[in-house]
Length: 342
Image: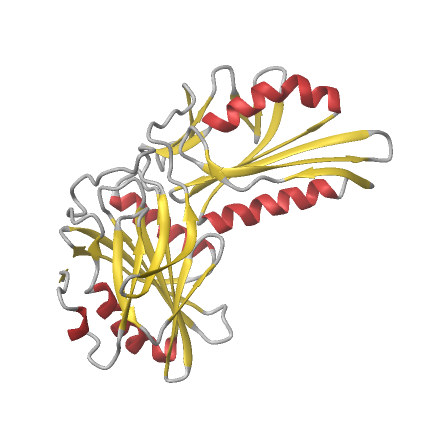
């Protein structure tokens, strides 16, 4: 099946006035019924609507994806299978001349059995649009039909085909602000976005993580990994990795933070910046926490990074003096560490 843009979106939804959703970071825009509502959270925008009184929603986000289409499908299937979701179908369609990778799953873990359809548009952009339709199984067919009508209105903001390279913003990285046009001439800003760095700088050392799957760890010179520990001889960090969305990465990071918190009797300081892109192209943040144990003071430094379905966490703790003496090495590693499929 080939999906093509519709010049007059009003023909698609004859009984609805339309709004326009635009995502400058992915260079994509969509028309959707004005009866739908747009919501946002930290990591994704959401379009919500009802089908026969049942709540349906679609997540929309931009992601970096730098490996082959089949590998994306394999990772998506593995993520769902490992979370006890049934993968019903995986297939590929065409949207505006580029592949649209699709996965349909059934989640029995919900109170109302849920069907979810994930789609990734393989455009020639630093960030590619990913959508995920969530619907109760009882109204899944109708919900899917309505969302397919919205996808028929898909177009690029730049006017260039998704297969062509789009112009970058003045900072050169494709960053921008996601907006929604509610009426002609009126724009409502809904979420600031910051693009990935124009030039990726990974660590110079390449270490195998899973040779069967073809995944490798890139780290700064002098670092090695063994039995879940990253070391450069003088600094050791607990290392873990996984696959999933950014919210999964953050959830795993919070678990590590929670375990470390249990060692402290009191907390004397805490810093947690907003997540941002690192030199490696991975997006993440760190928790710097100070406190006291039964014996002495302790500084904790716990980080995560995520990109294109892969994530890692690093966990370090020590004295204030050790924190200062290891800071440069740890921060350089955080900027350059990456996981890649090759």
